Every structure is written in structure tokens, then in C-alpha cells.
Image (cartoon, rainbow, N blue to C red; front, side, top):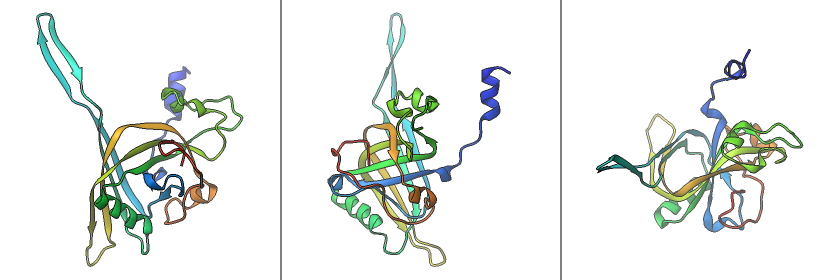
Length: 203
């Protein structure tokens, strides 16, 4: 069996439940850890860029514009969820927010010679020997451009947010504790505490 056939045989469909978002206000980067928003139901990250064609005597030349994101997130509001309140206030105050989009199925390997294939594609250096409990993630900074709460009398309150992302998301490996891995579908706690530069990838 060829390598391509073996790879196809081993492929499995990815499920959205294994992808979670963590948030933090950029102004709190030196004093607080990133936190998971409770009861996340879905999020969507779309990317696009304008491509303009210009006619020349030798044919059409294409030029590409800047990368733009269409970033949305939806969750059920938990009672007493201070992160949701912080994010709503950040939207009103126009404050920068940090976002980690974490893939729980893609990990770094401690003391391993086997490199994570996706990390290799993105040229992430700590795809091997990055330590345990580190997961492939994309880090963003941006503003909350829309915040809405849907309050149906017979249903849970659903909050929806849209984000205006600055620049381009950066891929790397982020730390997630064992307790967080076991409770990612529930409202809980935060990531490991640390003090980093405000534009650092780490949480």
C-alpha cells in the first residue's frame, strides 16, 4: 500500500466539539490567564482577500489585497459568567481582545521524534519536544464588532459575537491543563497563569 493510500485509510472526520475558544482582554495580559467562555455551541472563522485584475498588453495581471476574516462565535449564557460580561463591556468600550482557537485533537509530543504533520505545514517549530498538554491553536487579536443576546421565553439565552481581526492569526501550540481537557464542554476556570508580553502567543 502506498503512503498516500495509507494516509487516506487513516483519515477521520474532525468534529467541531474538539475546537474551543479562549478569550482575554489584551489589557489584562500581564495579570490574568485566558478563559474559556461557557457552553460554546459553534464558531466560524472565514478568510478572504480581494483579487483585482488589470489588463495589460501581455494579458491580465492579478494583484491580491489584504487578508480579511469573518469571525463569529455563539454560546449559551451561563449564570454569573463574568467573561461574557467582560466581552460585552469590551465591545462597548472598543477594547482589544485576545482569542485562542484551540484544536484539542492536534498535540505536540514531548521527547518525540515524530513531528506533528500540520505543525510542519505551518512551520511551527515546537511541533516536537514542545511538552505535553500543548495543543495546536491560532492566536488572534481584534475587536468585538457585534454582540447580541437572544432571549427566548422558552429557551436558554444565546449570545452571538462577531470579531474584527487585526492582521493575520498566528499558529502555534498553547497550553491546556488536564482539568480543562476533561471539562471543555462545561463552564469552568481558566488556562495556566503566566506573565507574558502583550503580543505573545502563549496564554
